[in-house]
Image (cartoon, rainbow, N blue to C red; front, side, top):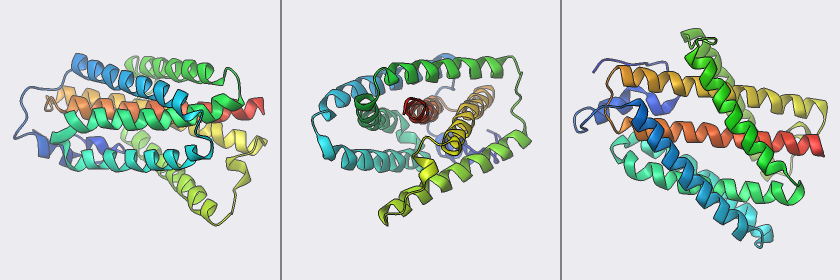
Length: 247
């Protein structure tokens, strides 16, 4: 198997991941297989999220420790899968359960404050997914090396912003634009939504290239796991934006 893309901004598709798979996996990655696994992971996430949403409503302040633990656990499992892709068929469903727990907590928090916000966020998330798939398949937006480099910088900047906000929060320092409904806060929120939406193009492109290169079948789990992460990210950002607009 050749080198697929050393410069990918999506860590799920690094060449090292493929090398760990190619000698022990059987079968090759396919569109139908990736779609099926993505649907399964989404179902697990939705079911877990719905259950945790109803359960979390009665937990009060305990919501925040659960939110923190699920966020960290999801990140750890995500990167564990990168290092151990042969276990993706096990870690991907577990990751979906953790993401469902995380989504359930966030949904409970926003849903309790703003009526109708959850349904609207779900509709916007999957509508955006459909639009980005259309833009990718019609080549209206092409995933070039320059596009990947720009996206890598944008995603990295957002990650640093999230991390800085989180760390400063421990010391009682609040960045107003990350929480308030000011024009700046809404503008940053929209910018993050745009980057999250464009991240789908990276996912589609790398899945497509791996299929063309006849990557091992277990890459279907990794591809679907990456798509799930982007969907959850976008959903959370839509919740934040809609809450600001209603505030």
